[in-house]
Amino acid sequence: MRISALVERTGVPLATVKYYLREGLLPPGISTGATQADYTEDHVHRLQVIKALTSAAGLPLQKVKIVLSLIDAPGSDLFSALGQAVASLPPYRDEPATEHPRARALLERIGQLYDPAYPATAQLEHALEAAEEAGIGMSDERLEVYARQIRGIAEYDLQRMGSSELSPVEYAVLGTALYEPVLLAMRRLAHQDIAAKRLGGSAG
Amino acid sequence: MRISALVERTGVPLATVKYYLREGLLPPGISTGATQADYTEDHVHRLQVIKALTSAAGLPLQKVKIVLSLIDAPGSDLFSALGQAVASLPPYRDEPATEHPRARALLERIGQLYDPAYPATAQLEHALEAAEEAGIGMSDERLEVYARQIRGIAEYDLQRMGSSELSPVEYAVLGTALYEPVLLAMRRLAHQDIAAKRLGGSAG
DNA sequence: AGTGATTGGATAGTAGTAGTATCCAGTATT
DNA sequence: AATACTGGATACTACTACTATCCAATCACT
Image (cartoon, rainbow over all chains, first blue to last red; front, top):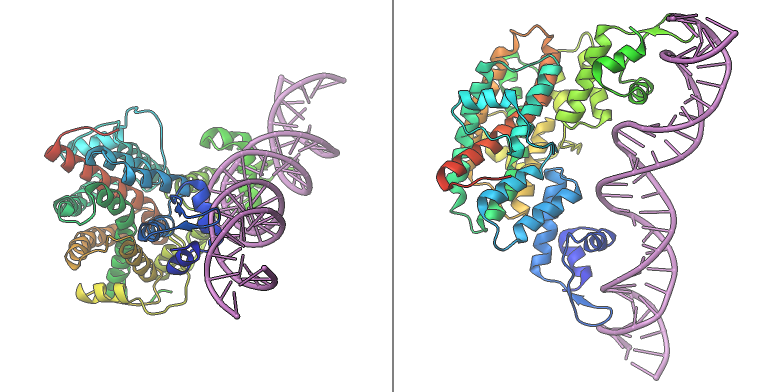
């Protein structure tokens, strides 16, 4: 299909499609002449993924590029792709692997592997620290409740991983990024639901 | 204390403190002369909260301003503050309340209040839609697993709300924003932990 | 064959965000 | 008196994510 069809199918403006081509987020179409190129269904899909990652997951284009390159890489194994995917997601911390005492204490308490080299370990440490600094540090009890519930979700995620049509890497990377907003929205709605049932009222 | 002490205590650069003063994120100190003003512990705390909201929760300053104004508002009731806090958090969707079919179907299935006017309802709809468009739509089963686990967290949150030293509004607003990164980091780490125990390997 | 629309490619411009830097004259401090 | 620091104003910068314009080649259609 021509570029105009791509625009029509995805709703992404022409100038933006050209911009993504320039930035290497979208592979060029197959040239069928000096001023013509042929685009495929893959290009449509790619644009939809970019749209989802930027608008739903809120990733900057630079990070979208990394995520897409992970999906494209042919021989990448699932486990390291997962790690790299996490590193490419906000919040961005790329300190060298130092000690993460808060994260370590929590992970050891719940019997989970502590590895300061995981990007998510630094993210957890930073998040715990930020909450503390803002004056709403999290109690051990709360952290344990969170960990237990979250573990249930993660176990389901991994168990379902095999049964997707997508490649494991694509499933892992997109699932990490795109299911997170769902999780957060659910928590917010659960808060409102519980509060409404308990207190009455309505919120806009 | 003088402004230089504020800078020293919080690590926020002077030019940035001045910028926050200009933008109204930080209230001015009490003027003790034409070129001197007195800042308090409250200013230190405020700067820490701003830091936490921008760097951990990733909020733009405009939204931080809204969150802070909710905390400051004296008569604001908890329930609407919660709603407004949610609306001020990413991802930002401020369409008028239309129908949200995916969110509605889910909420009705799990017996939760569906209100298209909640900001989080639009966020949920959008997140579900984005996942679908990217080709990794979420099954009913998965959504129910997520909802069950998340509800456990939300119930704990609400139950604990009374027992904080902070005002309920401050607790609700900061807790919504600052505990989310913890939740996400925990899920990512649980993925890696489960994958490591199942597959072996290490990720950087 | 002629005409207008479309295309790929290059380049420039814009809007928003979050600072950073500089300058100033009036105090504090020593 | 000399130096340092302050509040306040203004200007500048870097980055992100587009958006707009221009161009010459070339399609599609008559």
